[in-house]
Image 1 (cartoon, rainbow, N blue to C red):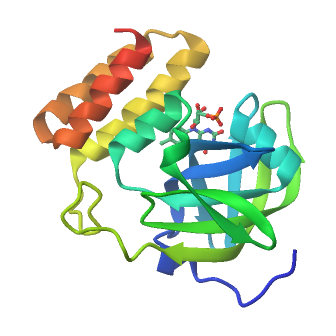
Image 2 (image 1 turned 90 degrees about the horizontal axis):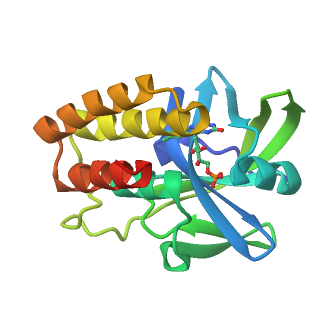
Amino acid sequence: MTESAPLNLDEYGIYDGISETIVTTIQGWFPNAAPIGIIRKDDRIYVRLFKGSTTYFNVHSEGVLVANVVNDPVIFVRSTFSNLKESDFNYVSVAGHKFPVLKDALSWVFFECNNIKITNEALFSELNPLHGNVNLNLNLNSDINLLHAPNRGFNAVLEAAVHATRYKLTNDEKYLKLIHACSVIIAKCGGKREKIAIDMLNDYLGE
Ligand SMILES: Cc1cc2nc3c(=O)[nH]c(=O)nc-3n(C[C@H](O)[C@H](O)[C@H](O)COP(=O)(O)O)c2cc1C
């Protein structure tokens, strides 16, 4: 792929530090979505994918990914534990390829994955942003509102989902206690989407 004008990731809501996005990838006809942190440090952008996930497999074989910026906690939980529905995706044409993005993304950035390094546990890749889009058609009155003050309940959903992926891997009960602590914050501070999200997460964990 060839590079055109460099993208300014700030314009797509991906700042320095770790941005929690929903990464969409494809294998054959099958789209996949999962929460993944996009790491931006100084001028470097990269990703770390743990072995065993579909995202790891797809990035390893295709060498591209899309980071979708999403502020709906329900999408974070659904994409952590299950496959999203075909109707959750739109397809865009980038560099001659059809690629899945999330319909409800506030913005998305298409990245080429360079200098892929594989360790025993994970894959590291530098990310080169090739194309981006800001979804200006989102309805300000919908659940997916562009204007959103920080909400501790939303942050607690992200924390709970991270603990839940670790619990699934290790079965260590300490993660259930941490998820419970997040649930208390969500009950106090969350809105209805955060409450739906934590109920779904607990259902997935079978509690
Ligand atoms: C907020 C959040 C951030 C995550 N970040 C990463 C990450 O940076 N790298 C990674 O390998 N997994 C990360 N995960 C875990 C994956 O999303 C999880 O393993 C997922 O089930 C993988 O789905 P897949 O098999 O469809 O790719 C994260 C999970 C959450 C909830």
